Image (tube, rainbow, N blue to C red; front, side, top):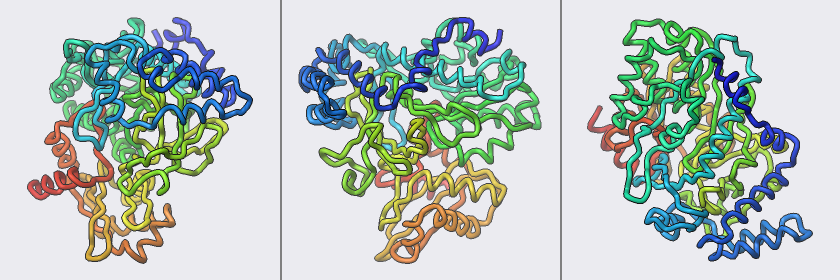
Length: 514
């Protein structure tokens, strides 16, 4: 039975989709915050920060009175603050801490910057919202020009283990393992790999069993992080002596990816295909399903405004963040109707998992404010501005894409470090490719692309940022370092900017390998 046909037959509800299409972003977010506050008003958190007084302001005539009261009552938080003050008690088994009831599941997330694992609460309400947003996303496939055979095929979801760990009070593991393990029965029949393979905690074992089973499956859509999906498909092609992955999965039409920008991987991934497929981006974090690409040939994703999350936007500038990307006390924050297109904002979210004014660590930019269409531009701590060059991860990704296209090489991974250079500064690039390329020529082209993309960078290259260095490494070195850090597989991403302890660990590792 077709994937989409089955979903439609089960009765997909489009009310939420139509609501976002025909309601202003401001009204959607005002309603979402009201619902969150009403639900959590009698929790420990809601009483501590007087949610009742915020809710009273929803009846005021001023359009942002409720928002100003919310900001006045509730402090901005990061993981350490939420965990130390509230989520720790939730894991100890207390109920009604920052969200009603007890929380049974926690997603392990260390992102690309933190050393220790973070335990992010995943409530029943959040799981329900992720399912609903995921269903809305699948429905958008109707906008793509897809052949009939696609709808008779299955999905390969390359995620974490569904065999979760149990602490005595709660279960914990990858978000993909938590949500995949709770997929409705009617959709699990189309999902691959098999439940037995999904349970494997050893990443190598999981990959090998998927490779062994690949010829048995009719796959039309693959879902996962680009780096690990690339590795998997390369192994399948090598194992069976294929020309490309379409030799074994002729109905493959779409790759749904997320967690990291796809531009650096596209050139390498294209080489694994027999013909073009649709690349579809999603923004599913451990804290919730934030956005997804809702139509083909778009660079942007649509922010979900009625999916259990209230968004705030912090202008990403020197007034709100220090040089290390740490947010200041009482930063300026804006609602969805107050943002401007083309400016970088750090994202704060309040969610139905009990996160409140929580800095998720990503920076975004609005390409279309009317339709709430965004791109992810980087991480608050993953940017380079040693001397005012203001280089974002988005700048880096686009420069890598431009250079790899020009040189006809696949750059599967890269990272950049800002380093002292006498009394001035330098950028040191590490490029992961298995293709032959001349380092100096590649360095010069990336440098030129960045000058074209970023005026501040161009100016500083004539002043304090005198030198750019580049080192080409085998791609496997990047994945070996992740393994050495205990960060292999699933949703793990290689950090695009390395600083402090991570940079020291990386440079030591590279020195030993080369």
